[in-house]
Length: 214
Image 1 (tube, rainbow, N blue to C red):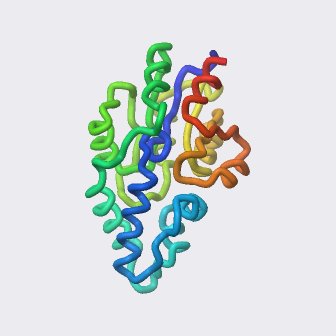
Image 2: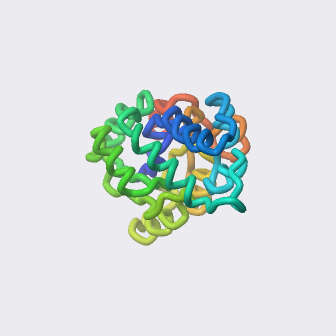
């Protein structure tokens, strides 16, 4: 085993919140008379970072209103459903096995920090993580600032790091860190998109164990 630290994305990788995310955005779309997302797969095909561009693909017109208005509405709609967010199947066992093996685990997320902390408390997994690096705003611009903070605080060799995520932005982040990456196909982005990123793609989060301990 060569890894010392597992860097976890949160939404879609640890937290199974795709359905809640779709419900929230459909509420915001309906308020504007825009079409709802047709299916989970349709959502995974259109989702991406920065979130502003994803909204534009859904039909939001930012010449009529600033992006910040629907972004805040989405957060409110998501927060109202936050109790419905569960853990990705199998992830609790993976986190426990990593902890048992003495690996350090951190979260590197584009989610606003207070929202993320609330979900960690709800899911009762706070103790699994040594540190949380997250966004200070709700606008889904990405995790580059959080990644920079991680690099500043955690001076570990890139070869000792493994990032686990569910979007092409996680792949980009791993490249910026110079580390390995695993992409989970059950999260927020379609598998065919993940397969173009140049990193291994897994269909079950339990497969992380096979990679780390092989």
